[in-house]
Image 1 (cartoon, rainbow, N blue to C red):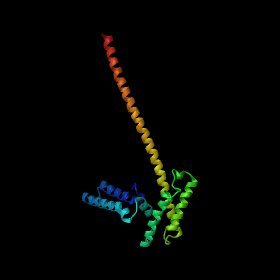
Image 2 (tube, rainbow, N blue to C red):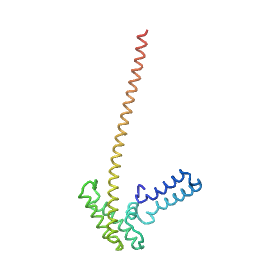
Image 3 (tube, rainbow, N blue to C red):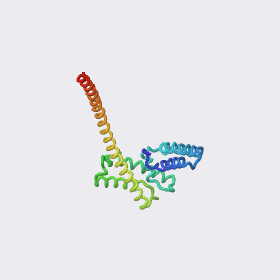
Image 4 (cartoon, rainbow, N blue to C red):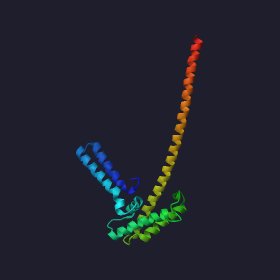
Length: 197
């Protein structure tokens, strides 16, 4: 699900299986069968991008912009729209998705405009204005969430690295204190022995 946020239904299904097992409502055999079915569906989903002739990122965008009851021809156009959109946002020069693009109003508008243009130019005619507008919003919100999540992850990694460095320093300092403490204790025992004699 890290690679494709549209797979939340799989997480929900797994949680349902776990909850049912924990509540004791299903026999172990039923639970095992449900778990095996779940694993098989996950395997099929993992191979879907290759079957569709898409990358994981393209498949994720495809899943976000597709709608119900597409013809085969319309489905191909939606796949092409997903590929074109990713290319426009990430590969075209000048690059639209620059670092921290979501923090500036102007770059946000540039990303929104690029999404609207690509989807307007490539989605099938069966996408009316309401569906088109909804899909543009969904895709923009997706990229916004991913950028914020990536930034948050970077901060978490930075803070984790800082904590690890502090931990190493503390462990080294603790070793020095412990060695000093042992020396002081030894010195104390020696002094106590010397003065008591």
